[in-house]
Image (cartoon, rainbow, N blue to C red; front, side, top):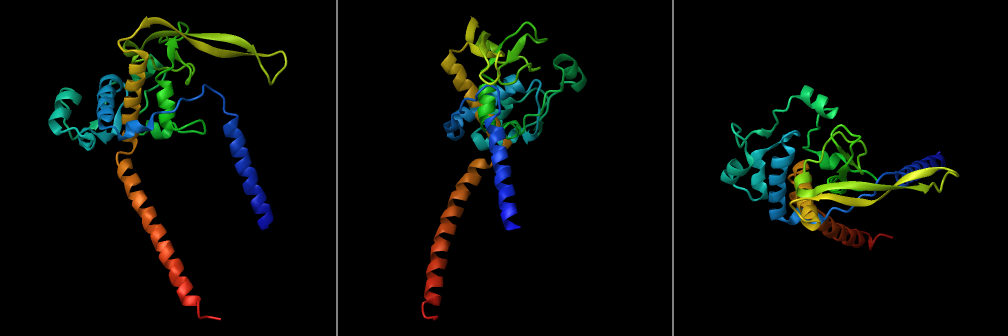
Length: 256
């Protein structure tokens, strides 16, 4: 019975690993994790989120006043991050009509409170996904919005950051499929700049990293405290394990 159970567990893990390995799609770039420790980056990400994302996407599980935890005081939040009529203790809601949004974009824009956590997969973390996604938009006249995306093909969302990034066209080439004789696949071959943005490529990547850092933080504002407490818990458990081991040895040393 135990042998069959172990075989079943091994087969399940092997199947899961094979499924992850066979995942297709555009490879994800690594999000720079040091941004999570950079208060200035988180504050800039909050500003970008309010200015570019909060027009369509809500964050209904996040209150404005929680941004005090990333170094912003109440006056800064009111003056720079609040729209007319909103209060600092309210959640981040939008006035966009869901019916109109569905007609414009083909679906209601999702709430972004935990978007960074929900996009994690075998290909990478949710932050990796968002960091790559926001940097791989390209012009596509066949799409209703005029935009497409390498990470999310046929996406309904336009590139809201195009003024910062500029406009790019994607080049694709036909290559033989190594797995199927006589078949060909559509391969991405790079971007071509159609018009420059307000930011250089490096500065735009930094801005996107700041925005993703804020989205990652917003999904779990206490994550830094959790990690810090977790380190002390592990140290305590290691110390307690050593003490328990020595007590056990002392207790049994005279028992024959």
